[in-house]
Image 1 (cartoon, rainbow over the protein chains, first blue to last red):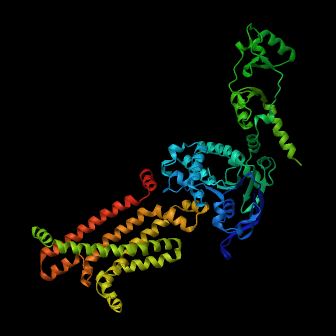
Image 2 (image 1 turned 180 degrees about the vertical axis):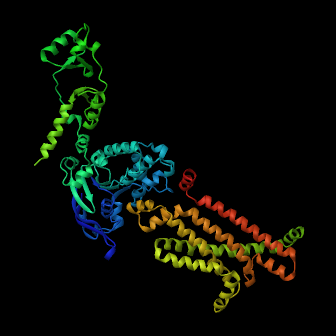
Image 3 (image 1 turned 90 degrees about the horizontal axis):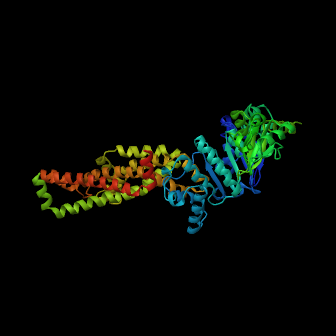
Length: 374
Length: 223
């Protein structure tokens, strides 16, 4: 847990004094990722650097697990806090294993433990220890280097991790991948993380809570949903963008809005004419054809009209099915691309779990906004 | 030319003795110069406010002609009866070495990418660890280039130091001039040159050996 209590930072003195942070108070709970977000020069990086005493606080206090950081020695404090930066900063003279081992070695771990930990971290970051342990940073790509940067940050298993735009210098495709990998890792290691970013998309994706800064002030501290659905003022609304309803969709999953028991389900072995009758009775425009537990396509009355065989023979295949973990943003995009208003959702094993319709999505958005209206 | 070779062969014992003396004076001076210059270079890289004065001082020392420097030191060292001989020669060589050593060390440490220093600090390395484990290893090629310059330069200056009785290969040149003995002058001059070339090569090799492997790979890949 990190608690910021009326933290103020002023650079310089007298006429040249610049207030970088003005009376900042908030708490990062244990196991949460809090993204410190804002345009450049808003003080987010400064706040991060105050947290491990790379910069000194002008006024106020920072408590880590209830203890004032000024009570402990700066060097000792930093050894207990993971630190990952955009420029990565691997030591070019040290091998990958030595780079990862820096903090464990500072803490005096024994050699065997260090070696085990290095291999474990390399495996966790999808780099084969045999292949990478003895290489040097210059031999790695930017994405691989930052994986090592993150591994180095968590090497001594610190409870708290400070990350300064860790994926900012990575190309977009690799960045997405690193973010996903990191979220998976975080689900396992549950660190308390202060994560600086200027990218609202990254913030929404990574954050349990977002602390939005502007000109040294904390403007809003809320969950991504609340930042998007109830921006506190014009600055926040502008910062999250006019497409914030779409961004909310990025936060919601298919399983949140799924229709788990649709009525218009037929079996692949049903006869076409039986299906037609059934649909006619229930006034259905189309029906989903399931084979076992898998959706194989859909049929309409028009398709069935002159058919004699089984439903599976004539079913129109779905161009796309969605996973229950997919974001509604992707689902909506698929609907627009494939000109469909209802899609089938499957679980990880490929089994049919329900449908998601354009109307489901619309309703959920309306619900969220009305729920947060006063 | 044959006469020169004959002289060297004919006086090989003296030549070997003088060569060893030359190496001793230069080697000792360089060793002490490293002990002073490298830490000083690191210090002024960390304390920027000192850097200007120190570098200006080293620069000024460099501009004093060697003969003049021997002359200036003579009355001072004469107080301890050390005005002539190897001591003033070694002191002069130490002083001359300071500029290349300090300047290269200073530049090398300054050129360590700031994000590497920041990462080191941020992970809880203290100043000492940061210098020993990161900044100096990364700086080794440039520091050694400074030592190489200093060593080669000192071999030349040490030849002049024979005038204040420091011995070394300069003795051959000096005595050769006095005796109007061209073969002797030439053997001194040639041996000094050979020694300089040899040491230059040796320092280059040392640079290759001492540069950390990761840095070599980085230089090869990144250019």
